[in-house]
Length: 486
Image (cartoon, rainbow, N blue to C red; front, top):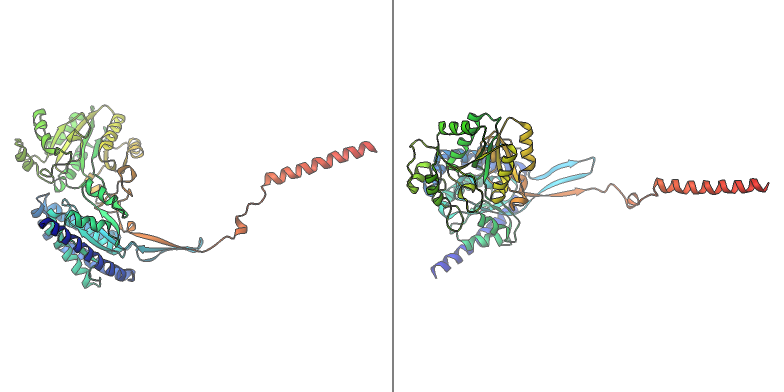
C-alpha cells in the first residue's frame, strides 16, 4: 500500500510539473532571442560559479568518480557549452534566402523530458537545461534516485538564476519523488513533446517505446586502436587521461586497446610506465567475475570506482600507484566481460597482425555492444585513418585524442554535448552530438516561383526531330514520283 501511494504521488507530481511547464513554455515561446540568451547566460554563470560545490555533492552522494574531474565536467557543461551556443540563432527567423524565396523559422518543440543518469548527474542537468531553454523549451527532469540531492541542488541553482533573468517559473523543474511509474508518466504524457534520454539501455528503450519522440543514446564500448605509425607515448597518455578521467564514467571513454604484434611490446612498456597494471591470467579471471551481473548488465559496484577500490572489492593485490587495470583478451561476446562497456578504469587488451585485422576486430566488438557510438584510432597514416572512418559502425571516429573528452567535443571541434546520439545502427534517432539544433523544428515559409504551366512537359527535342524527318521523307518521295511522271 505504501509503494502504491508513492507511485501515485509520483505520477501526480509529474502531472503538476508538466502543467506548470506547459504554461511556462508558452511564455518562453513569445520571447525574443535576446531575452532567451540573457536567461541562458545567467544559468551558465550560476552553474559555473557552483561547479565545485555541485561536483563534491555528486561524488559524495553517488560514490562515483573523482570530484575534481566532476568540476571539469560542470565547467564544460556550463561555460564551454554556453560559449559554443551563445551566438546560435534558435528563436524566430533563422535564415532568409531571397533568391530561392524560402524563410526558415525556429519552432520550439514544447516541453522536454530530461532523464538524468547517476554517472554525470550535475553536468548533464546543466547541459540539458541550457540547450532546452536556449531553444524556447521548458524541461522537466527525471533524476536518478542515487543522485537525487545533487540533481535537485543543481536545478535549484540554475532555475533561480533563470527566473531572476526573466524566465517564467516552472520552465525548469524536477521530480522530487522519482519512481519508475512517475518517469513512465513523464515520458508518455500528452504535454511531453520530446524525451532526452541519457542512462542505461533499459531506460533508453523505454523512452523510444513510450510513443513520444525521443533522442536516446545506447551504451558506449569504444575500442582504441594504436596503429604502428602512432606516437606511442602520446597515444598511451591520451588513453590513460581518458580512462582515468572521473574514473571512466563517460560512455565515450576507451573500453579496449588494440595493438599490432609489431608494436605490442613497446605499447605494453609505455602503458606500464604510465601507471597501467597488467593482470595475470588468474587475476584477470578473478576480476572478471565482478564486471557484469548475472543478468548481463554492468555491475554498479565497479562503476566510477578507483583501481584501489576495485582491488579491495575483488581481493586483488595491485600496486598503490596503479591507475588502470588491463587484461589481455582474445574473445568478443556478450559473455566476455572484458570485451564490453566498463565504466571504470578497466581495459581489455587485444593483439592483431595488421590494420585490416584491427579493423575487423573493432567492428566485431562494436557490433556486440556499442554500435553507433564511438571508437578511437591513434595513427599518423591518413590512408588507414580514412579507411577506419569509412567502415566503422560508429557516429564518432576520434583521431589522436582522448575518447572521453574527444567524444563530448572538449578536445575536438564537434558540438559540445553530454548526450551523444548513436544513429540508426545504435537504435538512436540521430547520430549527432545533441545541441540546441536538435531541440527545435523548422517552419518554412516558401513563396511560389513556378506555375502549373511551367511544370507541364514540352515535346522533347527527339520527338520533334523524328517528326521533321518523317515529313522530309514524305516530301522527298512525292518529289521523286512527280519527277518520274514528267
